[in-house]
Length: 287
Image 1 (cartoon, rainbow, N blue to C red):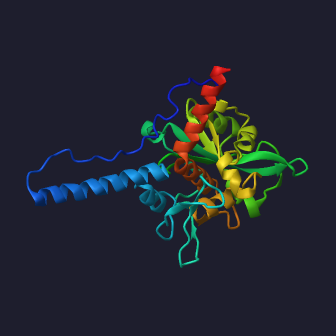
Image 2 (cartoon, helix red, strand yellow):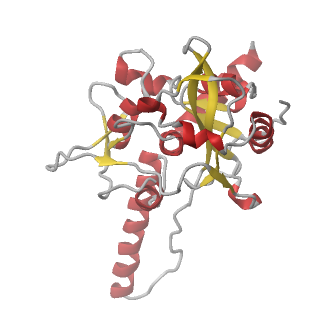
Image 3 (cartoon, rainbow, N blue to C red):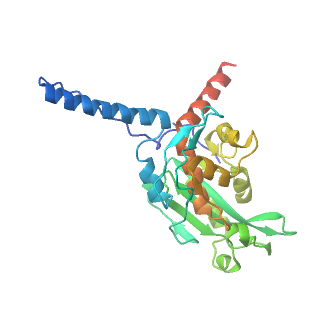
């Protein structure tokens, strides 16, 4: 698909702290203002250190459906520059769940189609069972809202539904949408947007779609995340547990949950990620 360059950070704006500029003549008023200034500076430090705003906690509770409040992240001593979720006395991990019933969902509100979209697909086996065919595709916006979720009507006989992993059952596909329709709708939504996901090559391949490389943010290929697995490709489940402190894919997978997880990982490291990409672009232009 074609795509205009545009500003890659459009639609991913961070809130900025606002500090009071008023002067005071009395000691009490000066103390009050100094107190507010310290609070503002602390808030600014949180923005700079984490690369995210204080809405992070609300986002995780509201859109990732965490069972408990999130814990602060700290920089790893063994892997400098990599943030890990700080451990607490309670060893029970949080989990992410999909709030929306699966199968048929399309949000046509243009405001919901943010500049950044996360995608995840579920597949079933055809031919000898090893070849993949699209069974479900889910899209999530930067706010964690599911804007598209559809099952796909099989165009070939399904040999293996892979239910233990995919969560797909024969009844799910009986009333699915045709592949051509899903492909067209997904391509339309993704056009001109930054695409986030995990191992996106597999998802795009099964959709028979392509996306500009400069607009792809793949959590399986981001070098910072590879530090958790000694340079190997990390699984989404591993990243969710180590970076976000939540458990996913405890049995059958859910493409909405996986898309939300990939989006959250991207947003958490968005500032550093985009900076590294711009640095690479600058170096290539000078050669």
